[in-house]
Image 1 (cartoon, rainbow, N blue to C red):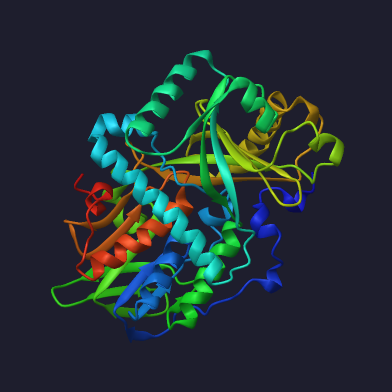
Image 2: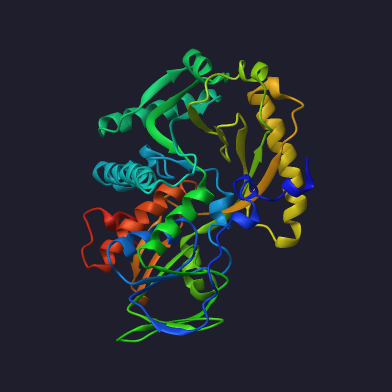
Length: 407
């Protein structure tokens, strides 16, 4: 495995440094209506939504746009939120659970439509999603979840073990199939939204970590290493609370997830691996996820664990890479012996109930937050952009409260 490809996300490695856009560091004092903190997919989607609505907006990113959790993601653009449907219904009732799933599906479709309309070149393509199991005890669990979805009017179909094998090449006992999902190059999608926001007047700044935020009755000051923005509102789109909002860390938990990417696979191997028009994840704890790229690579991830110290990340990545390649070979024995071309890790922030926290918090005036997106951060980030815009305009929609701090 090439050292230069080890520890660097595939999506980042495929864009040469000289072709990555560079935005200026913020070094002045200015006024703007809204400041967005965080330059990942959520921050850039939010900047685009606000700029498209004609709202003066600035985005500040501590590092480089899209090179954190966004570039480390698998690029799955799914309609399913992080939470399985039936547990969500048990917690909040059918009406609320159905509404959350409808919101998530609409966000996924709007994200895909926006990327197409903006002509962002990010390998966007439709994919089915298959949630499968090889565990006898989990078959009934999945079937009950499917029955609950259908009762709520949420479309999905059941794949028997034979049908699962025919579609995916996997030896499993069954699974739930949903149609209309997408996969994407997350890094290029993020950069495309940032560029579209900038064209509409958004101010984008990299290498501009926020050091302090101070609110009063009339305005809010957002201070970076190089300058200060005075604004009406700040939006914190960092996934977690960050050092400025330590009390909010209790709402989310951080886990490290790991991903491996094979080299392009030859025709003989591909012939034994089933079709490549579906992205997969399983019922294991922690779960695994699998997708194909256009050049016939398999992306496989999982092996999640609690957040680890920075000094141990490289060694743990080596161990988890070997573990994932072994687990992939148990799914597809034909690839035994294939070495990964890329391997990397990333941090996922999730919540106890699997739903994000999007919107205002009573302890932070003039703030809006977008935290805890879990494994479906691309679609939920786009959902957050719409919800945050509605909150800022004083026009929250029915259902927005379901992903708020007050639920």
